Figure (cartoon, rainbow over the protein chains, first blue to last red):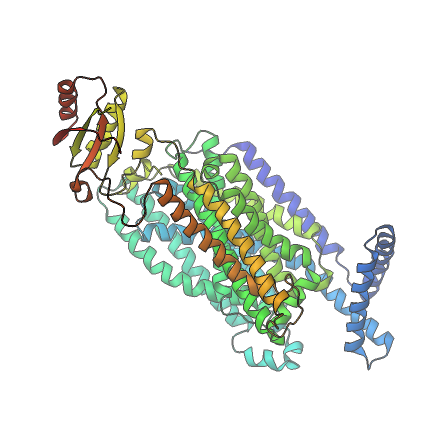
Length: 453
Length: 178
């Protein structure tokens, strides 16, 4: 049995408190009027100019701002300058007001996604009757425990956005929809109530499966036959069918609808790939952590090797989907599609390409060698970069549609990560104490214990 | 100089693994083991060095990537500039997304094919080569361990291999070209 170290508990709570304080401050310090925005921008401009003069990159900077000014002129050419400026300020105000909400949403989704990815991976292992993994089942079950609290917060955030209490979803704003033909066409699907009904069905199904699977797994410990194991096999197979449909729809609802004009047909797969990488990486990191503390003595380096292979493989799968989506849109160059990437490349160059390097180049080069996949600290190091990279990935999916050009990773983003990280650690490690760290009576247990690559 | 070689045949891979372990413990020299299918872990038990073919594969991949880049740059940009998807920028880097599939494919192609060719060369295999297989049953359901008898007593060796579970033991004069 695992006991929750009190130090870990205190650390997790400190993280949550610091995160919550940071978030509260971010919400309170967000500008409330256009005058405040003007003041803030004036401060930033002074700073920016000084910076541009001081460095040799001034030229590029000027070119960019000239292009931006040109674009602004094109858009507002017929309006008088004062009106246009006021409009611009108002726009920036909305972006800055969105920023803490957006940061909260991103971090909430990111940790929820890890848990969901692990749940899917767990179901795959049961449904495939995998022989190598049963020794890791208790770790996976503990990570999926976060689905419940994470899901509740996610649902609340969706409700706030879907009913336009915050302004994250533009399609939830009736005024915007009134002037937007495309959104009117999609209004049947993108509707606050209907969004929440769907979210309730998706999350309800996932959590239901989670509760039954974990309950059966624990009952199986005391059972004398394979009854509960067989039950878990059946519900896992059924869950996977349900999950693949709902995961895809979830990605349209919760992520793609931030850019409601744009759509991509492989978006669901793309989100799934990121989810699986993060989930498997988290399993590997927590397993290595527990092993280093003397638990999980039955996990050998071949198990770590297999997890690292999955991290490597799903990283490449993620890149494959990322690039497939990018290349087709880049090649066809259809205005309504390509605007998605134009925004990201023009306004988010560093995180957009930096994330590809973190999520692809880094794991590929580090985890390619077979021997490195068995070195614990190597796997953990790569895992941390992968997780950070996928946070930026989620950030890139959401931010351009909510905060736009006013983005920067600052206090709200970091506070939100701290808060949800603390919650995640607290929930997952508390769940680990609920059951023995090794399943009993699983027919593949012996194979898993003797697993050797 | 012709020395004697013992061919011990087994009909089970677990028995074979055990026999290889015992033989190595006795410090007899195993020349080769012939199996109808790859036996997991046999290389480690035999004490073979880990393969370096993965390193060659990585280098071949880099060669493939370089070939792809050079080739596409020459064909599509320098020699006969192409209008790619309505983006006639005549620059390799700006048209790079269009070239990525070819870069990927040639990397894989070079890595895979050159690795197989390297494997053949290293294993001294080529078309129409006469098989070195000492007993055709090893292509069906038997496992054969070839042991250099050296200065050991043949009778003693035979008894040892029967005890390890061999179903048949043949003593052959090794040929010089082997």
